Amino acid sequence: MTNDTRTQGANKPALLVGVLLLIVAALVGYDASQQTITSTYGVGPTAMPYVVAAGLVILGLSHFVVAFREGPPQPEEADRKALLWIAGGLVFLIACIGLGGGFILAITVVFACTARGMGRQGLLIDAAIGFVLGLVIFLVFAKVLTLILPSGPLERLFL
Image 1 (cartoon, one colour):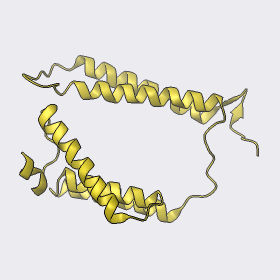
Image 2 (tube, rainbow, N blue to C red):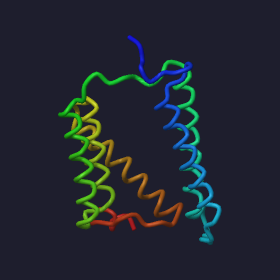
Image 3 (cartoon, rainbow, N blue to C red):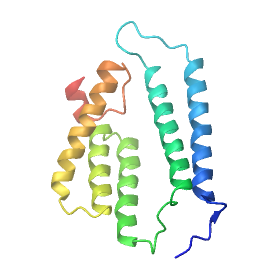
């Protein structure tokens, strides 16, 4: 099977995504360097944009490697059920945060729905994993970075 998007040994869409990721990483890094927010203790809120920028650089460079090796895998056909699970999780995330349900509950549901969309069948186990991840992320933001994520009833127990 040939890949129609490959010219001169490189996959054009993968190259484009890699370039876009590096551009976004540069913008995030520049924005982080312009922040004047300081913290009297802990890492502070300026650390996270640098972590995000580093992650975007790694993803961008990874796209270059994939583009010049074999190219990204080509999907055969969209799995509508998987897309519905993932989209449903995203809709719940937005509604939960917008209606005051809080970050931890929103992340719990979006993690479980995304895992189901990716083919996992253990919805309750995935919800428990999502809860632990959401709680850890919330506590890192609240206690280490001194940033408060959207709070709901669960988050008020830990503040």
